[in-house]
Length: 395
Ligand code: PMP
Image: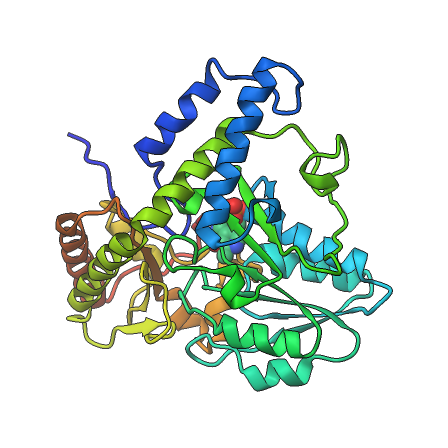
């Protein structure tokens, strides 16, 4: 009988929490009103959106007016960068980011460069951390925005956002962070961290896909941001389009659960990850990537000597994992993140990303580790394993 593989690709997306589905159901069926309509059906939807917005705001300790709904973190990142650059172009033409951003930052930066914006890509050390001094020295009087990924989606490295924020604000520069992978794993308090703009998404916290948010701090003077999508003036004229009520309700529920379960889940998931890594370390020469002291609790990115991960993926069908993020900006499906931390092509091709969640069990993690270890040993022993050049796509 077919047995579903063990899902260890939780950086890519997560399984919908059944409680989230329950919360969404009425808005996929009877409560179908457009939240902008001025009648009963509209009021039911707009009330549900207000409640969801509050729950999302509570999760990051913002006010609900500071949450703008988007279609996901890709759009939030696009909106933050393009929107700020367009609004502040008279004040400067320089932005700063890192070499290990998600493609929805890197690709936007490449486009902005074509339009005359100067972009500094900060390098990272071998653990994936940026150099704070390099950041400080890169800020000029033309810098209008710093955008730095909070927790990396491949190697899990968590940046020192508090210190980064202090540097940006001491120089009067806005800070945006892509917190997509951090939300739900770590307590993120936008007030305490003094973040100006922050992207995140629902489907990484067991919510539905296709819905995300951009937090924009309310300050005086107001942060100005040009819209990418114009239309009916929804979301304070920053993001027009009929609101996706069921998805927003689901995102709200997922945020509420993420907040209430944060400590339990992060301890649980960390324990799974640590058990998994302890087992895999039985293989000679295994190397854990990322910053061991500042890493997402659900992340394990490992380099396994003398094998190609593509071959391991073909051999171990009982475990769903990935080589790296889908949205790599480098040619040949080579991870730009692993490249930035100094891995060579061979090491990159021998690296795998595993992502854990509250939906995993200890039993399946142990079984997954055992299957992987057996397959790795076989591959390492066989001198004939084929180095294929087929691309494997990931999410
Ligand atoms: N940023 C990071 C760090 C991510 O991991 C992802 C999802 N892979 C995104 C942005 C894009 O999120 P979404 O799928 O919601 O567009």
